[in-house]
Length: 226
Ligand code: 5GP
Image 1 (cartoon, rainbow, N blue to C red):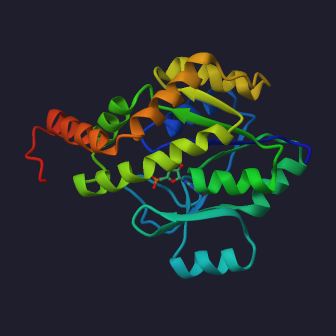
Image 2 (cartoon, rainbow, N blue to C red; image 1 turned 45 degrees about the vertical axis):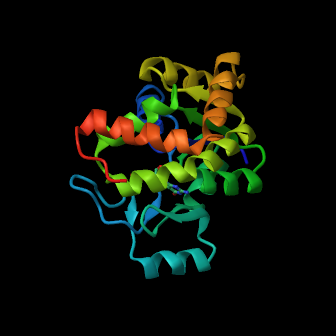
């Protein structure tokens, strides 16, 4: 491969999409891979720009034919995957390609291409992550609770990434990501401590569940069912 392959991942709500968008504004030479997805387009989303929106049948046919570099099913049973040909063509042409994907897919890419530069975006702390997810308003409490249960394994996987970036401030995190693209692959002590702290928190899931309920009540002012 002549170009470099970059994967940016991290928990939902960490802000990886925002940081990647900021990076692409600064570095238009980077090619963002457009994924295939079976979920319905949201208002304003354009087929072929935000995603290639496929039916489940179309998606699975593509997967069977080997047309996807990685794929994963999540988010209410929806499939997401990276088109293989487009990414490989860009890399062969010497371009840097960026994949902004969730952890399962990221692990598949890293296994196939160990030279991939992988970045895990961390939230500053669990409370901030939960608050961001609640404020985004795309999931009800039941879905948020299910998401919380999956977080410990997601965060455990972070160790396997080339580097960690904390998204405490978009500007700073974007600068850090830009530096990674320029070859500075160091992870600072602050980032390592932030990951350790998150993993320590997840050792007590009862306290994490309580934290989610408390954040939900604080943000929404709603009654929280048991
Ligand atoms: P959304 O449905 O909100 O657009 O995206 C949900 C999640 O899907 C995001 O965390 C994003 O990183 C992830 N995602 C987007 N495209 C892909 C893909 O091609 N493969 C995988 N594994 N995850 C993806």
